[in-house]
Image 1 (tube, rainbow, N blue to C red):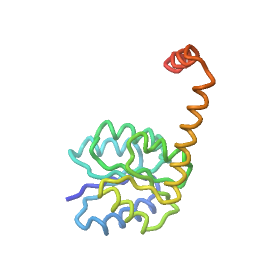
Image 2: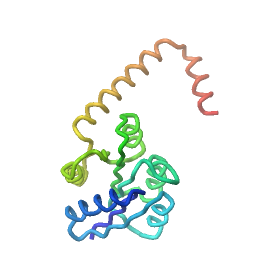
Image 3: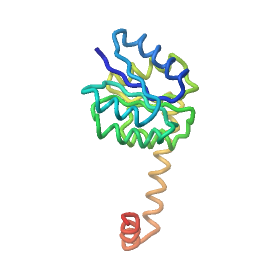
Amino acid sequence: MTRILIVDDHPLYLNALSALVQIYFRNAHILRAGSASEAKTIVRDHNRIDWIFVNYFLPDCNGIELLKDLCQLICNAHIVLNSGNDRVELVVEALDQGARGFLSKSGSAADVFKCLDKISAGDIYLAPDMQKQVRNYRSTIQEEKKRISHQISKRQKEVLLLLSAG
């Protein structure tokens, strides 16, 4: 039986996503949490959770912080961030922190099923337009890093690293 945790403080979205996931995984055991603290308690109380859907805006912390905590508590679960905020920086940060996908709350039921298919096959899920945005963002960041690294000396880099480390 597939165990799925859905974390969202909006009951309508929580129930809608639960229904869609139940269609996909017919015998799924769906756990629900309305806050980050509730989600962490559920994860600690259950020895296995296969999927976790995390809303970005939660009452007691943001989804990225919860994502970091969940990755430490249960590192083998497929974690998907969902949000109405489609900023590419947010999506990149979620992927960098261990998310296997991103679902926009403005997406469709078909997007949820595509996400489940893609991640079940071992891939990362992003909607096609978000894939392009992430690819462009990452290439731009790489180009900027190269450009900046050519403009500062080795010693300046060392000082910046020391400053960033505190």
